[in-house]
Length: 191
Image (cartoon, rainbow, N blue to C red; front, side):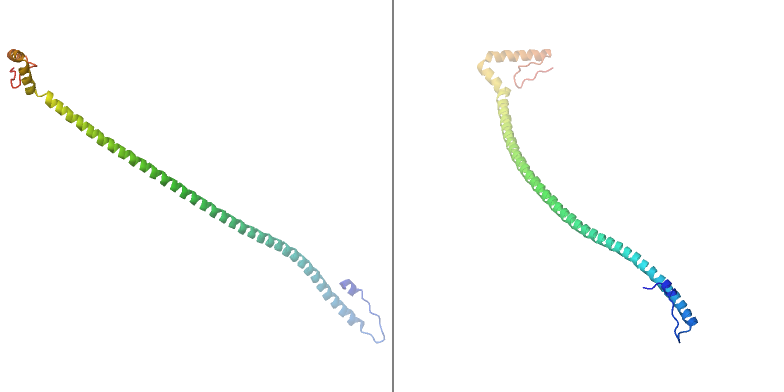
């Protein structure tokens, strides 16, 4: 490619009927200026193109890096999502298993408590019956042994003389103001 300097150094030979030198020089001068302008502009544009190509290559690298990063992020997100889902399923299954264990334990404990309650109820009923029998026995004994009329009659039948002495002793005590322990039923000591 010709440079503006090459155009300035061009020399035309003169021929017999050649071009006018002034017009050729004027044309060459304008051509040189325009060509120089275009040549510089071309150099500048090439530099701009090279700069833009460098930037474009950088942008392409950044774009590729971003694309790879996005793909990796998507894959990681999917992996995290899958792992979280599996973890959630495991937690739910563990919770269900624990709930079943707790239900089973509560069922067993409830059955044991119901058995214990039935045993206690039976023991209470047995104790109540035993205690009732015991109290009835005590009442019978008390009725038999504490019936003073029956006792006095038995004493009078067995030993009429002792009954008479006791009666007299009770009367003497009643008269002196001392309450007698062995007194005949129906006879009150006055005091």
